[in-house]
Image 1 (tube, rainbow, N blue to C red):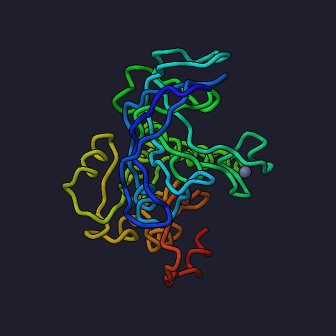
Image 2 (cartoon, protein in one colour; image 1 turned 120 degrees about the vertical axis):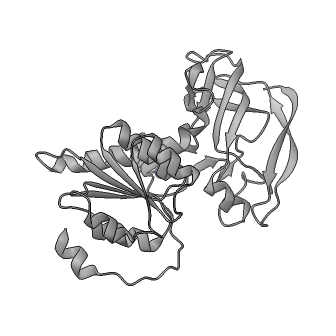
Length: 296
Ligand SMILES: [Zn+2]
């Protein structure tokens, strides 16, 4: 690899909160099997907020700083030798996690990693994509149709809900028949909204519950895709659920421990609930566990 100059990037010091600052990185010409990408857009999500607050994240081995950014869309500007499926000019996104050597990772399912020794670009042990240009192995680069450029930066968060619904359907193969008709999505942040859209695209009636009363931008998006927005400040979730048909799927995307428990309470017979949010570690709550258990 040879030096092809420097690029500007945005970094933090994981050992100190709120240290977002510009840095200059050396960039190398892509080596064999590598791709150089001109970054078009980088998303910022709750994970970035936690990294910036110093709650999670660590720099590459031997460094003090971590370049953030793990949601990306960019345009390929150069390819190394023996790159076969990616060409200069392609619009691409890049996956985040690089597997460790656990059985799940070795089997090609790093999302199911059991040892958590993996590396994640922009989060854990590898620089992210909030830079003018990045280099990546072709293996982790995914082509995106040009017409999706304005929204392709949402590919990474979309994979979260795609995985959730896929896993729900895989689990439900335990049943001879399962045709989900009604879903409740808890939370209307980016993950809740993408989950709402995904379930709607599968023809499922979706009720998306969040605290903030409508009208608000999230409620507008929920209604625009044919789902129903419910404010839990106006109507408690249990009261909302009492007026619905049997709830086949609950996607918990709120980060609120109370809603996580209520989600178990409202789930219908033979339903499946997917826990997608990170709730505060030290939350305590009382729950009607007897009723929850009896109704499952
Ligand atoms: Zn692993």
